Structures are given as C-alpha cells and as structure tokens.
Image (tube, rainbow, N blue to C red; front, side, top):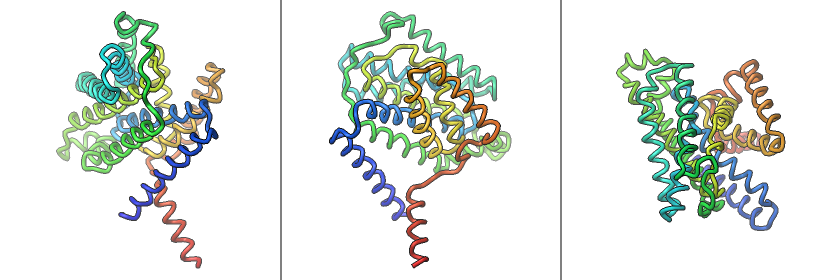
Length: 314
C-alpha cells in the first residue's frame, strides 16, 4: 500500500513538473493553457456530480446552479469587499453546500425522473434569480473580478477535490452510499439512514461544484448567468455518463476527452450539442454503463503490474 502511495505521488509530481516546464518554455501557449484549466474545472464538476449520480444513485441535474452560487460568491466578495480569493472560494463552497442541504432535504424524497426535474428546476431558478438582481450585474454579469489563480493553484485544488471524494467513497460513508445506490429499501432495512446519507452526498457534491464555480470566476475574471444554464448541467452529466456512473477515473478521462472535443468545436456550438446528443445515444445503445462502468484505473497498479510482468519474464 505504501509503495502505491509513493508511486501515485511521484506520478502526480511528474505530471505537474512536465506541464510546468512546457508552460515555462512556451511549448504550451495561452490557448492550450486555457483548455487545460477548463479540463481541471470539468474534472472537479464531474467527480463531484459522480458522487451524487454515480455513487449514491440520485439523478441530479442542478449542478450548474451550485456552480453559479460559488462563482457569484467569489465575484461579489472579491470585487465589492476585496476579500482574498481563497476565503471567498471556501465561502462559495459552503454557501453552495447550504443550498444543497435546503434543496436536498425535500427534493431527495423524490426518485428518478421527478428528482431530475426538481433539481433541473432548482438550477434554472438560481440562474433566473441571479439574472434579475441588479446588484449581481443582471444579465451582463460581473466583470473585472480580480484574477489570481495560476497553474499550481488549479492543479492543487483539483487534486484535493479528487482525493477527498475518493477517500469518502472508500470510507464507511461511501459504502453506505453504494448500498443505497444498489438497493435503497434493503439499505434502509439494514439500519442505514438513507435520507441522511443522500443529503450528505448532495451537500458534498454541491460544495465542490461551488468550489469549481469560484475557481472559474477567479480565473476568467468575468461571469454571466447564461454560463450556468441548463446546457452546463447537461455538459457535466454527459461527462459523468460517458466516463461511467460510479467511476472517478472514468470521469477524469471523460472530462479530458470531451473538453478537448468542445475546444475543437467551439466555433460550431450547434454541432457541439448535436455531437453531445449523438454521444449520449451511442452510449445508451452500446455502452450504457459508460467507458469504465464502476471500475477504477490506478496508474500505480498499471506501473506495478508492468514492472512485475517484466520481472517474471526476466
């Protein structure tokens, strides 16, 4: 186990060092850098939604609403109150988590399509409220948000998000969430407080969506209500479904692939949505469990297996 931890840490440092050097020597230009940051934001959103949809089995479509809460919290607190970004990021995450509790407690009593519609309605309500508040900039949003995030900050925040969610899944709380996903009635019969765990997963997912929103506004320097519309929730859902409901590594791979496809098709937004629809249809027909299903890929395991295989051959 200790060897796996060491290998994982070395791989994380290696990836960071390589990308840092490529940025330093200009091999990675500003456009590629922008897409790397978008990939990291999408990874944060996807792994946090996977905790709700994939691990707990609750079908939520309101993630863009939680992201908007975090983004606007950072936008207002850094612009109007000159608070440091990292404090506003934590406040944004906590506010999103509180909304997750307020919304989750009544809404999570619903199931399936009804839950999806209710959470979708929540996301749209948040967007429309923001759009009609003049203090928040209305439809024009907030501009000139202080920008202070660099590559290192992005990388560390994303890593922390992944590590916390993976550890939650591997803990006794995670096993309770998986039990609820597999059979909620049986889990309740075994003494698991299903309402508590479902709301907890919803709050944790909302917290990290709020963090992702804060990071977005802290990097790009401007936000508008339309950024967090229905299509943003669909984007995140497609990433999770493509990677595999219940697979964190699948969400990471899917976020990388779909962000690169979106970057390639950014000048053709209509084509992009058509492509997303086609991807969803193909997944449902040929790979309904997603690319990885509920399996996880560990770089440390791949490395050790390869090394072990080489040793046997020798």
